[in-house]
Image: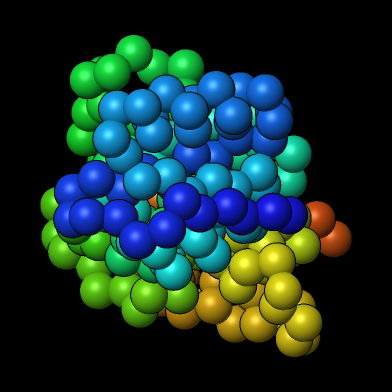
Length: 207
């Protein structure tokens, strides 16, 4: 997973290019160098997350279709870690970047940029890990998310602990999020968890 650097960058002139295609990566790097930017590059999502925290670029040019973690997941991870560097997808024209709107499902609202969560119009206080778990579920509502995927998204790819930690944090989230009706965090036995409004007789089990 190579990371290359052009050396120290002056303030306001550093860009992280995240692209797995070598020819596109080289083209973008050359064009940015010619425009006077210092450039770091990464070819996977995991490398990008490490490099963004290490080098703190002023802009991240991010490919959506990465070989390990898609660009949207990389962005969610960075925001959850408090990295608010502007991101534009590499297929967007210059100047097309915009503030990411809050994630919403039913009466649940989560703002990744301000780290604020509301349910039924009331603010919900979450720990950083609870917040990342909520992002993981809320970013793909009504889709069942397996424990392995949650561990990768929330505790990152190198987490080697007991997977039962997921159950513990889901219980914590339920105490805060599902004290309102309808209950939203559903257990799909033997598979994982799903953000879905409970239905009478649905059979979804809570921990």
